Picture 1: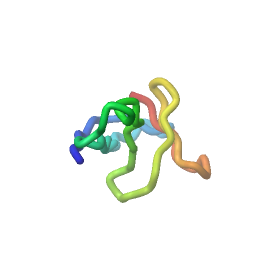
Picture 2: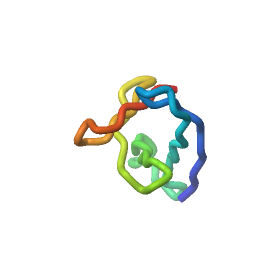
Picture 3: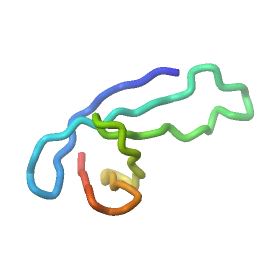
Picture 4: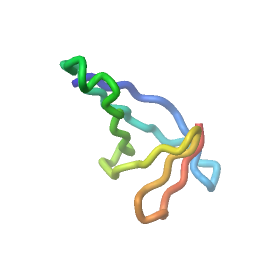
Length: 63
């Protein structure tokens, strides 16, 4: 598994870090596997274009 970090801004204008996790050893069938996104504190994020939101909607980020 590989990962990368990138900056984002929350709805209050605060800077946050999003971590993207990608599976490295994907077979031909799994090459479309979606990356997983988390906040620096481990909370899961769901991506929609350039926006990321926690499942409960308490954090909304944009890149």
